[in-house]
Image (cartoon, rainbow, N blue to C red):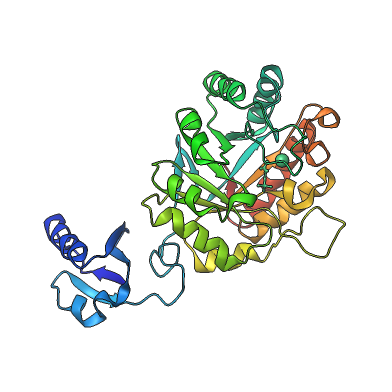
Length: 338
Ligand code: PEP
Ligand code: MN
């Protein structure tokens, strides 16, 4: 159920209503829009019916949200959510580039890549230190040593950092250094991890599971939102299909579908979606044209020597070309590259 409050309701009146909501065992989630205040009621909605809420003088209307996801839905919040990461806005008109290596492999390489991607237009640096690898024998990231490099590189280049956490225990290690926490495709339904990051006051980039439906994706986001963290960025990174020419199949239509049913920003990862650096530029341009708010892309100075995902990592010059071409596409749809 969502409660739409009357225009001009005072803060004390909202507080009083919140107390009433808690008294009947529901959890209130407040969304203050430009015009109206909306309160989402999470819990057993049968606790009280629509008429019960309409009796409160603060309430203009009470609407039952029929979709299984509630706080993520456009019914709960009409306006796009804009997430501010050190003054970089994700979900606004600007398209944000988050670029860097698949994994932090060493200090020197991450410094070189950070400098290059920043010069070419990236606003956020990506780089994994805990890598979810299919084989336990593959390079699985530098762990704590990598976090040290991320901290140094962030301070040197004044670039916010996005990196993945795979378990609850890693959150504490990374929390001070990292600006956006990434939940990888393989952990999209790790519900206890989602609940933990839901308790943080930090943006979370949630990747779509490789076999997740859009509804399952949004229900995973709901785990984070319902724990109080409203800073969720969705990331479409391709899903498994019968097609083998690409590593995954980018679900391009998921972008406009998500835009219509959720207020959360949507970023596309063309690297994992295609698995091939030669496909990254066209697929990114298509994603921007379809409404993506940002691109999360792998870039390496020596992709052939990369310890993970080299084949899909862009050469620096390709990243430059990607940003330049993205400007043209963005401008043609009334947007711009941040
Ligand atoms: C990654 O971003 O490096 C990654 C492992 O992505 P995904 O979870 O989408 O496979
Ligand atoms: Mn990767």
